[in-house]
Image (cartoon, rainbow, N blue to C red):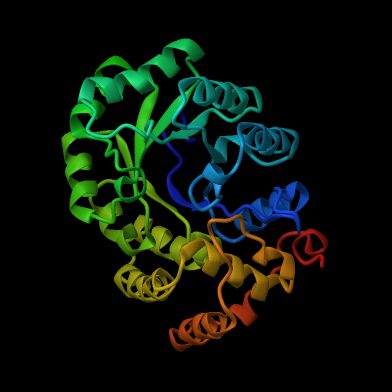
Length: 319
């Protein structure tokens, strides 16, 4: 984070590489995070949807958080996903993130019960904040109604911003609705509303947002970084750069996203192990693999031309 607020710029919702038995491959994971930070990412979202966090046990997630804590990664540029359905699990993961030196956490709502009141939703976050009782904690709410069925409402945000203005500092808007992002930025000045897709990076920045936390930044981060920096410089090329970025994102959106990104990393690194993905998700079929590469190439994005050398090749490309 910069000061007490959210990181500005492009954050990749980072993939989690796995071993052949579908457990987190911690050395390859740290190498991937380093690689992303070397390719234009201003920060990383760890243990989110793209990282398959909800397919992992609490113990597995704690092992990932511990590995991050023991790494040399810059902790002020990381956001760790800690939100679960069960309050004790969210509390344990949030405490672990803070103990690892990461102050910013991304919290899903407790997503089993539907149709909950604003006050109940706000209380679920408030209880974690109160029990953690650490003024350094920074919470970014995670709005992903298509997956959770539980939207983060403006009413709940209003309660949390009133009661915890220095702790509840932002929201990741994965609704796919730019109008929602813009309305929240207007309603809550100073509240860091990230777009969950690079498609809306430039318009969200122009509306006052801090940037994006995006799955596809695992492969598009240099392009997204160019858009962000062109905006910061008031560069006239920002719109053209955004158009190119949107075209690539549109291709990736036509595939099962985590599987497509893991296939992209397989091509980039030459490491077949990147295809490991935990059910219920499944790898791309061979025909879809070829379609992905060809469709990206048609937009001028050649996976074979991406340089994997900015991170330790031994970790990224091992068999």
